[in-house]
Structure formats: structure tokens, C-alpha cells
Image (cartoon, rainbow, N blue to C red; front, side):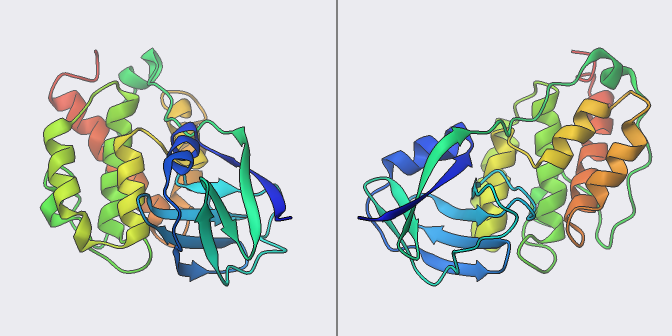
Length: 240
């Protein structure tokens, strides 16, 4: 009998896993708190301990580390991801949707965009996708913040999304998955907390908490979100 560990996941990821054909995913990255896999038909899926950055494209374990998993081998069988012979069954659904902007957030002044090592031009994805180093290049983080904040404001961006999707082969598998998540309005908890705090006394602390995520990922997400707020205001859509 296959050993099992209960995990939690977003509704979209749960449903996607259930439809997957049997396959042998490739291990992209392995650490104490996270394993990332390239899964046929799904792209990059993470398996995370609670101490990891809780990206929306991942299965989450209850403990802080991945113990007893090492991430040596993974398979998908009958719609269930197995890592090191342990079946990771989704037993709980987690909400990864970006909150909707409230009235206070729509009226709040837009701060200066954080200074980054590359231009913040989210309206031009060709200048950003794949720009930067690491598992999530900084340019992609900026785009994720911009896309997710638009979803928070109730704004779809179909033409922009099509341009981003055409560029995904230029970036890492994890970053491509996170861009797809952002286009679906799925975010890390720190981004959700930031959106909830906009226009309240907690905004500065929430912005600092978001900026602290990862090496530069949080700062990129924050820069993209600020740029999106300004773009929505300039185009008259913030008040919608």
C-alpha cells in the first residue's frame, strides 16, 4: 500500500492534478523547505513546507519542512502526485485569490515605485519576461505584481496576457507558472495581505512585509503592484 501525506492546494491546482495523465515529473529544484517539479500537462508544481514562500502553484504540507520527503523521484498516477513513493492527496483547499480592492484602497494615494535594477515597464512585457536571475527573474516578479493588482481591481487584461504567454518560453518553469497564476489572480499570502491593507494604517507595514519576500521577489511584486495602481488611476479604472 502506498504511504500518504495530506496536503492543501488551491482549487485550480487540485482540479488540474485530478485531470493529469500518468507521468514522471522532472525535479527542477530541491531544498529543505521546497521541491519544484516539471509536471507534464501542468508546468511547474511545488511541494512546500510551511516555512517556504507559499506560492500558489504548490501543494502545501502542514509541517515547516518537507520531512520525510527528499524529492529524489516523483510520479503522477491516477491524478495524484507521489514524491519518494508517498502519495500527496489534496485534503484541504486553500484560498490563493487576490482580494478585491475596497473603496479605501481605490482612493489611497499611490506611493513612488520602488527603485529596481531594471526599468519597471509592466505595460511592455517584452522588456521584462525572463529579465533577471534565479528561479523567478525580477522582471517576471514585477509583471506578476502588475497582473495581480489588476485582478484585484476587477480588470482583465486579455491582450496583455496573450503577449505574456507568448513570451513564457523565455523564462524559468517556476516563473512561467507564477505568471500564469497571476493572470488567474492567484498570489502569495504577503501580496494578499498588502492588497487588504491598502488605504489603511497597516499599508506601510504590509508593503514592507511583501518587499521582504525572497531575495528580490517581494520587491518586484511590490513595484509591479504600485505601477499597476498608477496605471489604473491614469486610465480611469481605479474608481470602477
